[in-house]
Image 1 (cartoon, rainbow, N blue to C red):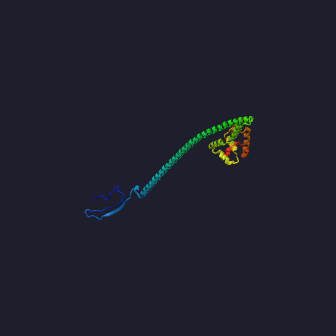
Image 2: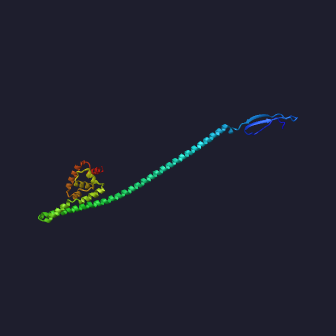
Image 3: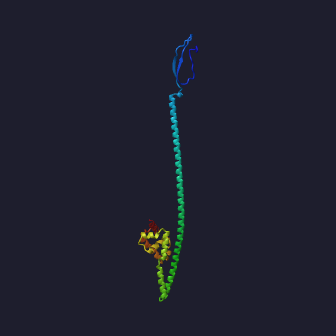
Length: 257
C-alpha cells in the first residue's frame, strides 16, 4: 500500500501486460481491482521485419557460400583438367620423342645396312669390272693366237668356252639381287612398268643408277664406249625420255610413281 497515486516501471521486457490496482480507505475497506492492459513492443532488431531481414541475410549467406564453394570446385576442376591436359601433352611429347628415337635408331640401322650392302655391291661391281677386263684381255690374246694358228683345235675350243662364259648371267643375277635389295626393288619395278626392256636395257639402267661412267659400263657390257652411247640413246627412245630430262631422274621418278 502506498499513498502515491502512480507507479513507474523501467526496462520491461517486450510482451503483453495487464496492470491491476485497487484502493483502500481509512476504514480499511478495499475497492475492486481495476485493470489496464498494454503491450510493450520489442526493439526494432527483434521485430518481425528484422526477423525476415535476418532470414533473408541467412539465405543470402548460404547462397553466397554455396556459390563460392561451387565456383571453388569448378576452379579446382578446371585446374585439374588443365593439369591433366598438360600431362597428356607431355606424355604425348614423350611418346613422340621415343618414337622419333626409335625411328632414328631404325634409320641408323637401315643406313648401316645400306652402307654395308653398298660396299658389297661396290665390291661385286669392281669384281665384275676386273673379271671382264681380264676376260677381254684373255679373249683378245686367244683370238690373236688363233689367227696366227687357226688349225689349233685347243685354241678354238678355248675361244668357244670363253664365249659360253661370256653368255653366263650368274654374276649378273647376283648383282641384280643385291642391287634390288638396296634400291627398293628398282629393277623389278622397272621391268613391271616397262616390260619391253631387254636384259641389256635393265643392266644399262642399273649401271646408270649407280652413276657409272661410259667406260665402266662398256667394260661390264663388253661393248665399246660408242656402243654405250648408242645404247643410252635407244633406251631414252624406248622409254620416251624427253631430251631435257636426265635419264637417271626419269628412271627414279618412274620407279617411285
